[in-house]
Length: 172
Image 1 (cartoon, rainbow, N blue to C red):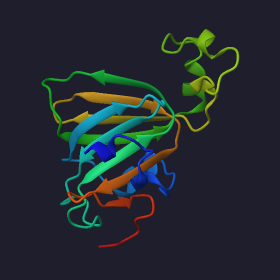
Image 2 (cartoon, rainbow, N blue to C red; image 1 turned 90 degrees about the vertical axis):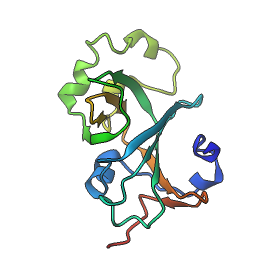
Image 3 (tube, rainbow, N blue to C red; image 1 turned 90 degrees about the horizontal axis):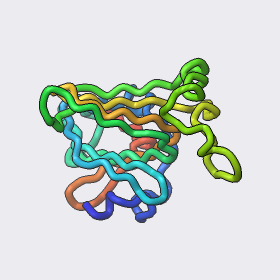
């Protein structure tokens, strides 16, 4: 799985930009399993999970490892549930409203002073594509990501071949 760790690898070249709400309208992560969450030094968060192909019949057989690269993550939280679990019960993703973004300026979650001066990253309150994605396991563990809309996603098979999920338009 080493090739899944970096979005700089050849498998990612040509991947289309997509967003989590659109991905979750087309595919489900229900009954899948979290494999890994990697915070890359370049600032991306990469989430790998096993897909249950029974729920995702439009994905070709064998392409059961979904890798999501969040291009601009702002925060990630893990909230422990009843028991440690990896089986995904649900995943939801929503665009944050202007009010929710504005509230971040007054919260302690982000230090406003950290965004002063020359920076390539602005405060998340000013990102009009700010999205919250929540992965919930069957034991109520939650991984909450606050990120910009842009993601890239690929499905891999055991041979290391991959599909760009944003470009995958096959119907059952």
